[in-house]
Image (cartoon, rainbow, N blue to C red; front, top):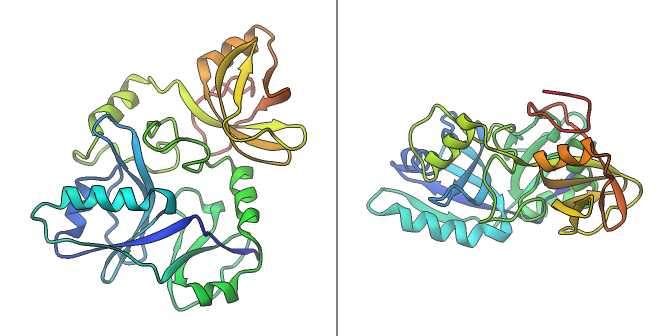
Length: 283
């Protein structure tokens, strides 16, 4: 069973009597209530763009945020600004790291553990001291990234840019990261409008590619026109942020979809409900 330390992740702590209400008023998903329960969620700008996505874990002493290290400082700063008079403690837990096990039974460890709420196949995650995690790890982090890419699940900072992407574009609506029935949160009006009007034309989807895909950020072209940008990839597969309507036009016109000369064939993961042009699946 592979176990990897996710060095690109960091852990924050939110505690205090107002912690649950505080998070519920800010984040896209409903705050978990039972210890051990985890939810995929995000903090948005008022314009509906993703500042940071995260996994929120409820614990006996508050909440833990499993978040990308690259946006942690900005996330903490934003939460501090929103705190006002709320009885909330916000901090970073530098002594903890995030580890993940997938592909079988998870290890028995006396620590904070939770299933990845985005997709069961992503495995089970753990928050534990670095020394303990190092003893458990059996594979490098690159193996985890290969597994994630194979499932077609986007990762912020690689497949979409923080501060530039809407939750629908990052497929958060498909991965349980948005609660459309909860009350208001920052950016909620924009997200709800996109959902009800069906205006999410740009999406992250996987592509089959022959060999090693081009670098992240490489333009995706069809008929000489840019229709998106490439994200993370591994041998034979890559994720790309594309305009689905332009992909449909390209396929209808018989144009090859490519990035830096490498042909890309769109694919549709089983967890996706929207139509992906060129996959032979209309829904």
